[in-house]
Length: 361
Image (cartoon, rainbow, N blue to C red):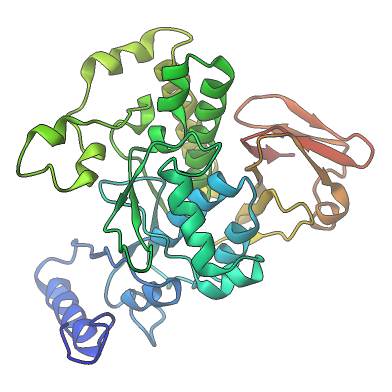
């Protein structure tokens, strides 16, 4: 809603229109769901569910753009400090409403985390966004990301980031250098990001091509109608020849595709992953880890402990923070994705580098 002197976001008139449209659909097409693709500040997005309500009276689904930006922050910093704070302060959703969680989409990545969360994590918000832009566009020394800045403001240095998930995760550079270790790290990063969105709570959105590691495309440069918009590098025609490689054992495509298939199959089986707003964040001392519990409210014994490690090295998690919740009281837990047993050693467990473990008793 355009109004002089305002940001033109979240104005009362826009929400009244949404409520009117919703009321009309309840009469004429009650099966229609409304999705809010509102890329606004974290504290503002929940308003599109409808304020002063118990159940959603505007949109039933909202894009969780904040989670996407927080996940990529974890990739660049190799820690989960800002990710933990951002999730902790993510607004609660209403009944009959949910988040659409994604690691990448057809558009750019906006660094839409809250400034206050950045400060609490120990960062200067403006400098930290500058670092993230430099990291994902390959300007930062040691970065393997192959993104491009979008909508860059030369005066302020602000920008958003274009690029495919695989290229931003370092797979493009690793393949060019034929670096097996870097390829492994990129594959692990891609699976880590998807493991979080599949276990977080809400509707996971998998962008086309990400399941086989689709890289940036430069086809758009040959089209005058697209050449000025580098977001098209992440909107290429689907490569069916590349997709066929998912059937060849040991290829990048096969490793990614089979890993995602296993996680999706598990998600379908686990009642703890049903979306009842049942995610419990656990504060841990290790800044590299994101830890939360998903449980079935109808059967609390059906629960999953999710531990994500964003660091490139294995991390130690002491059990003094987990045992009060009833975990690791029987000396070991099962890791559901890999099928292995996670054992206790010196009152702690080891979390592999760039991994997300789904643990059950």
